[in-house]
Amino acid sequence: MIKTDILIIGAGPTGLFTVFEAGLLKLKCHIIDALPQPGGQLSELYPKKPIYDIPGFPEVKAGQLVDNLMEQIKSFQPGFTLGERAKDIERQDDGSFIVTTDEGTKHHAPIVAIAGGLGSFEPRKPPINNISKFENKGIHYMVKDPEQFRDKSVVIAGGGDSALDWSIYLADVASEVTLVHRRNEFRGALESVDRVKELKDIGKIKLITPAEIVDVHGDEHLESVSIRKNNNPEEDYSLETDYFIPLFGLSPKLGPIADWGLEIEKNAIKVDNTLDYQTNIPGIYAIGDVNTYPGKLKLILCGFHEATLMCQSAFAKIHPNKRNVLKYTTVGGVTGFDGTKKEAPKSVIRSID
Image (cartoon, rainbow, N blue to C red; front, side, top):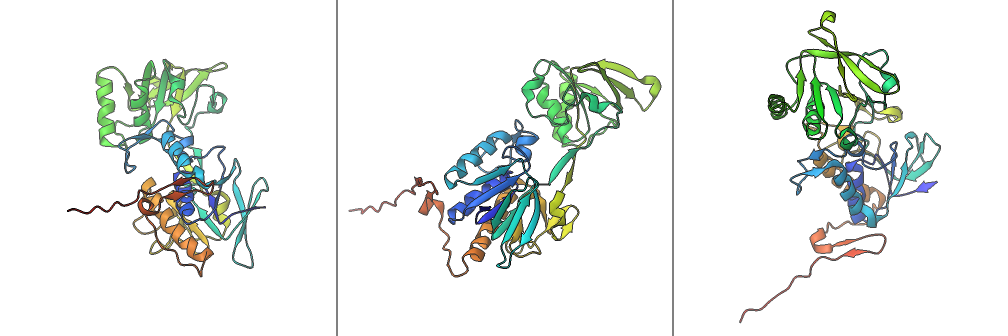
């Protein structure tokens, strides 16, 4: 039995930052995540993609942000149960919880913080009969390492931000990038659409619209795709390529958490945002993209804010008779559970004659 003060479900950026805020309050954390490494979507979907809306970072790669968060919480020594999915939850007589994973690992905590992002993801696959034959053999549903496509020919299908962004990024990596979309109009950011058109005009991206990929071919590895223009089979033609990346989005699912008796709305967990982001079950919180409330914005920085307030509420529940005095890190510094200290600078008082 793994015991902790706050059991966090989800090792994405919100879950990781929760460890820091809890650590400032001397609360110990343990994290469960179905993925084999911390970072959530940032590590699994786009580790090399730049993020521009993290305070203090004009630009930071998603993977670097995860590395920074892991460094920030290292002194608070969180525990990790990785590669296992939180499955069952049992409320104890004292109000605490036992959460068991799909591998049978049991965790006991008075507070459970669900920070599972949008849940588990399944890629939306195009309706191509033999597509599974080439999965991870030339067909990929996400870009984990752009260097994999260095000096290779790549066909990307899709019309949203992800298809546009990766077409732009890989234009400087791959030997040839072809973007195929079934409409002439795109759903992504206008600046991304304009950038793709600029790259098309200078020959760095081939843009084929309206069209779609209707078949894939090869022996042991993908060798070519069949493209249908204007929804007309008579206009089908073959294009040789090393890689095909269909980016039609991911289908999020809450998984077993949906059966925990929580109030769910449109695949998200309803919380009380007037105070602490607690769910309808006392002691269970939901923070980050997994929750919903009026005015909710699915941004990493909003998840950080929600984690901060949640930890304050968790402290009050765990120590109902203990007063918590908020101390700024610029005043109190940071002291880790491993004994390391980052002292705040002492004020200097000078007299003027």
